[in-house]
Length: 166
Image (cartoon, rainbow, N blue to C red; front, side):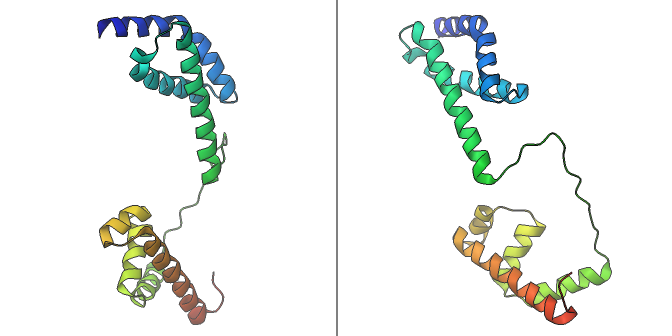
């Protein structure tokens, strides 16, 4: 075990600057993301270190981990629709007054118990669909259906009681 650690530490000492330079290019110049990428790659490489027989293959192995991780990170960001920005947008916090709270309670009371439970857990408790599904003993698809129908019904009731939705 000590031999593996010594070899790995020597590799990191010798090649970390070059790996960081490559990672920074893979991360479009973002130093923090590059450091995270190198760290992730070195963690994965450390686990596999005993299986890398040839010394000349070590750096190629780590670089390939970095490249795959950078591509995966970009794909995940694109799937979620995440937009990277330097400025955090300010989101106004609007506190509901007593009238709005009473109206929400009345709308929630008009829903079925399952729809109400899903909406409360999702939007008030900020739980994920998987967490709600586990809590209610149903599938994530059922949670999505209850949430969609519940919100649609609340919108419909709100529109019919007050005119156009605010």
